[in-house]
Amino acid sequence: MKTTVVRPLDLGEAEVKRWRDLQLSDRDLMNPFLAPEFTLGVGTFRDDVRVAVIEDGPDVVAFFPYERAALGVAHPVGFGLTDLQGIVAPPDLALDAKLLLRSCKLNVWDFDHLIAAQRTFEPFHKVRRVEPVMDLSEGFAAFEAEMKKAAPKSHKTIRYKERKLGRDVGELRYVFSCDDPAELRRLMDLKSEQYTRTGRTDRFAKPWIVELLKHFHETGFGVLSVLYAGDEMVSAHFGLRNANVMAGWFPAYDTRFGKYSTGMIGHLRLAEGCADNGITEIAMGRGGKEFKEGFKGREIAIAEGRVSRPTLGAGLHWARTTPLNKARGAVLDNPALYKRADRVLKTYARLRGRTK
Image (cartoon, rainbow, N blue to C red):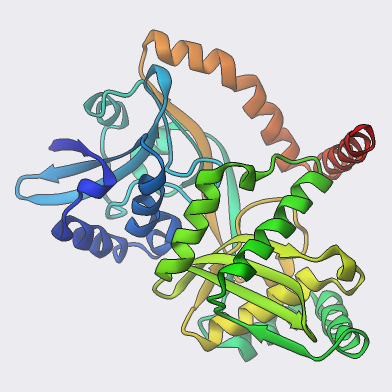
């Protein structure tokens, strides 16, 4: 085995084609976060992105994309923004993970949304969870029929509020792929308001993330979907598309219309729009949103953990991050704690707003 580390933009056409071919070896590798477009996009705006190209004789057998930080610590590309991570390789490939890190001159690789089935990193799992996926392979009518069975009350409520929204505010119109940059800016503004309102860190306060979304929107890798009531944008979603797979990424809604559950209406309209445009599944990401149970058709097993080599840098990183990761994991795994933490963050956001 030979490992060569390069910057994403130094990958040649043949290597990018091989990357795409390797994705076809496992349905979960088709997730947009594992597509070359994602790594190339992030690498355009960040200088710390690298790709390990792994060869066995004359053949490239795997790609290992990562972000390199201080002390030889690495994370998946777009860490904190991605809902699926891993090495792009056939599912039966098992590499020596610590040897891989040494070949990349890394001390640590942290992951929190790793495809759990990947054999290379299986010994290093600390926690396993699942990520829900909407199954649209049989079309929207079949998907909706299953949803009615799995969550009849939720489905009935969504459709009732959808009709009421149309009566009270204006005729509904859904645009699956909107190419207007002003509408993308509006989505980011709505999302920033949500982050502030709920006490979360505003992702769009970082200019490189704003530019990344613009880049994906312009190149067609990102899909902006908008629900209008009359002339009003009431909800929107920005996701990533790779072939027939959509990764849910940034949903947002206008709080003025919150009583109509426009976010839920938007999710159902997104499913319909995806099915009509050749998308067979939507990866929804993990998290404590109970509504996802009614939408999901299957699950992807994901893992959180760390590969580390016995170095000083790895020890310092462990001491700094392990307590925080354990606390965050406990909250995510306990619905009651998740709701309590959510309330605390919202209260903090309200108090912070009063002191400004």
